[in-house]
Image (tube, rainbow, N blue to C red; front, top):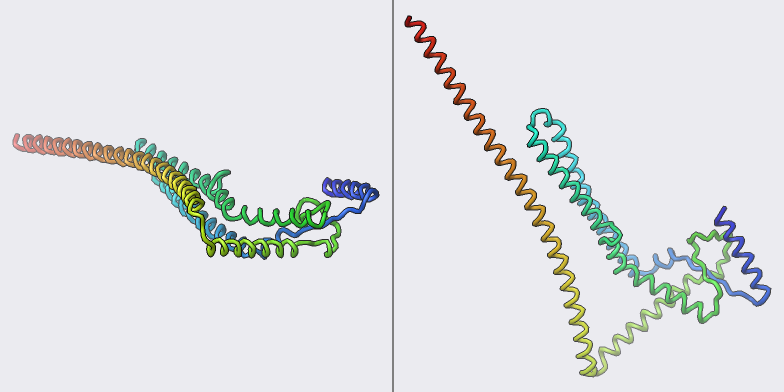
Length: 271
């Protein structure tokens, strides 16, 4: 109802403006446009492949976590309190690692967001720039998006400028390719080349710095996790050693008691 009300208000506003001067209106089908841009399809396929790989990794870790929980539940009755605490701590670490990975992949500033921003946003910007250029040239007052929240009860195909947007993007791409080719073929200014080289080197240095920082952060987290695992293993080893010592003492006591009983029995038979 709210969408229909907004659409009626919009129609009323357009009708009011129409009385003052003719209004030019067009619309686009964003889904149709993107599906016909090869770069977008390639970027989307790359995103889908990455998402599938990340989900597989998360599923594997989640299944391993469930196995640990099941094993603990089935062995809890025969484990000591220290071993139960250690296994619960290991499960907690695995849960935290799983949540960290989920956030790393699909969080607000995760890999998916950054990859989509890097691959898809430039293509979307091309579309918006093409729409703005067409609207400016043809003096459109409104350009609607067909699949948006605005309910379009009827749309005449002659007002659909989606193919015109695609054509504009193709022309822009062709023009940029020709310009790049001319720049390659023409003689370059050494000073300009030097400035470009410096900027490129700065960008490369910055990128390498970010990569190094990320690697160091990952290495630190891995080191912390490894230290935690080592601590758990050391505790397990100490507990196992302690239990072996206790068993040894118990066996020695049992043997001593058995020997004492045999001597008492032998002494009694001699009497």
